[in-house]
Length: 437
Image (cartoon, rainbow, N blue to C red; front, side, top):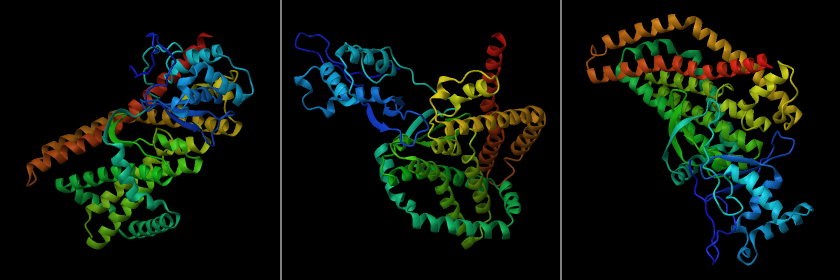
């Protein structure tokens, strides 16, 4: 993808000083990081966060003409070299700055080359098991407004009261109500099925608003909200890149904001159910609980994964799978990426990897062993749904409900297989490389 670059031309028409990529944003030091040398962060126009060592961040900050009113009166390379020399106590020349720009920053898409020419087009990297095919639906300024309506819910006394009420209502609900009977009544009513699906989708959307509200409560600006595909599941997202400006507590609050709002949504449904006794609401509440449990799993890129990552200050845990396996299973020398981590985060990452791999392999094994039975049962259920789709009083609702239930039967198996196949492929490649050495 080509990125927009800005450059200035002198009076002779020669390309002059390098300029930052249009729209680059300086984020600052990554607080409470798990790295031995805390990195500094910049955000590219494509939304990609780039981690830089302190020296390169100083170069980027010095190159940012917005912070220098006298930049036109002094060549930028001279100015940057002088600033670096003054801030670091080491002597820098224009050639040193040009080397850092050309060899370190330009390849990352942060600056042009020192002669003003753009680097080769950059391709946005897609992390392992990442969210794909994003489509922004709610623009940033609307997200800012909506999150402001709910940010007060993160005040300590309000949050404590809401969570206390949620726990009390949960105890009453599961001790006295029959969810199984409610589920049976919903499955045979297409209108109720569609209502439950609608409420589940509304809960997912409110979940994302929780992340945005947590960002605003922490004092940073949430980005756009939208939808996309995670593995094979349609999903919502909120751009909370700015949460990296927060410390550990603020980032974890942002991670938990979605599940917290799920709890508030369930609390509202429980209140309505208590007032009306409408049984489909019990099934909707159950679906919200399933979403909360799923989000807290630390395996795939759900909220639980980001909670672990923010607890130890390591943004992308998946990229350490290979180094950890080589280190602890193959007894190879420690990878440079592992040496860059502090000791405690390194231990936590190792434990996470050693937990993750068996769990994913176990899930894959169970899917493969039971796949024929699962496919057979799903096929029978889908046939039953389609055969009885028009048996209800409203054929349109019946067919719509049957299609939705069929999709919900197929997606979990397809998604799990798609999630686990890359892991197995990576392990096979790792074993193959090891066998060839």
